[in-house]
Length: 140
Length: 418
Image (cartoon, rainbow over all chains, first blue to last red; front, side):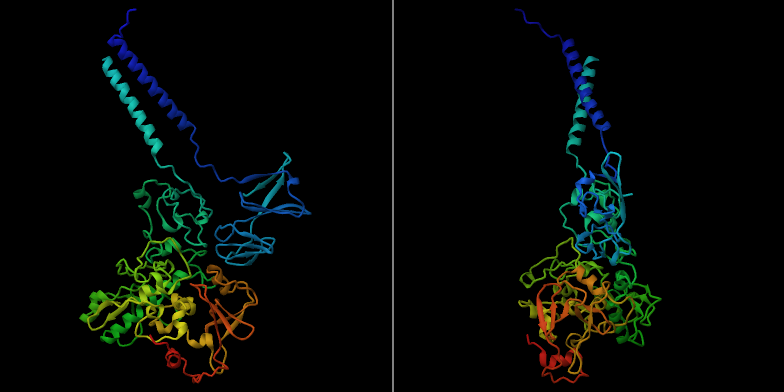
């Protein structure tokens, strides 16, 4: 069988096409990467907490992802922000209220200031029983 | 022509491969959005190995930029650090207001116990007004010991001491050559002065960090061998070795107007404690300086003074009382009492409402003490956590004249030889 010899012209054509194809693929990958780039997501202001039945009557549940304390009382659901109004540290729930580990502020069970340096109570957050049957908590 | 096209295609591919390689190897930023600022910063990309600076300043809440400055989104070290305020030490007094100030932080009011910057920048430890006044008085440059000059010009219109301003001491304007020498050689230990860094045990930072960022090991085992380390720490549990970095590093020789570094090598805490020429009672060297000396004594009260003697007032009787009177105490009934704030910052004790603690003549809480039911007292070392029990002088066999309350009087019977 006679071996077909690749002409110089064909070789250059093949090399050109190959290189351009690879470059195109690489460029395409870069473009896709660029288009799919996501900047830092904004800080969420709405949290879906699941079904109301997930929380027993009388329960106080720490929601560390917020951070907040979800309280289920006889009158329904309320929530307290666990962000200290002094400088923004996360307060620790205690049996008699809340303490800030950073500067020692203390808050009562309802979030009221017992002593400073915080000058304001813990923020009460809005909790809604949404049409989807789940509790939604809003931090804004 | 075909050959050129192939070469151009190869170059294009190489360039794209180079970009892909660079992208794969470049630093991936670690983002942090501190609660306090809500603004993204990338400092942790390089600095995630640093420990939390203190319990009161968690990085998740504060981030880095609010205290240090810098370019929050830069990933190049030079650019990121180009706008740092104070370099490695944001607590230097030249930048402390921008970095640590604010009404909720360290330049608030005395009523909220947050006037730290006002206190410390007017304190005798920074103004050095006492030493300057003594030297100028000694060499006839002023007619009284009342301070007129400080290390920098400072105004204090609300001063309660009678001194409402200090001019900046400029040795070059002094006519006496001794005062010029003093200015040249002896202004190295106020809190704004660049310390005589020698890589050894007396190295320290400037400003607030001179005390609150310990560079000295808190125990004797490493005394004299340790070197100053850049530490990312702020604390109120300040060991005596940190105070020694200024107060026990040597003496100024007034004959030559030069600083003479300490040359002896201490092997015990007693030898290491303060000037070798001084006398001590046991508690003066077993405790740390901050166990007795209060916040006001160390940081001032916000007014300008002529001498440390005008602001230092703790005596033996503050804790021990006299033959005829017990030391002053206060039962904690106000949850906003400063004692709770200070104990929270350095939790070597757990104070409760109803506890009775010792207080100074000015009412400052000695929050690390407690009156016990048997009439004795506990003191917990602020830097060591060590518990000491002590008794009042009243009812003891002490022969002291109640009017003689200087430490020199107590040292006559209670000094420890070294």
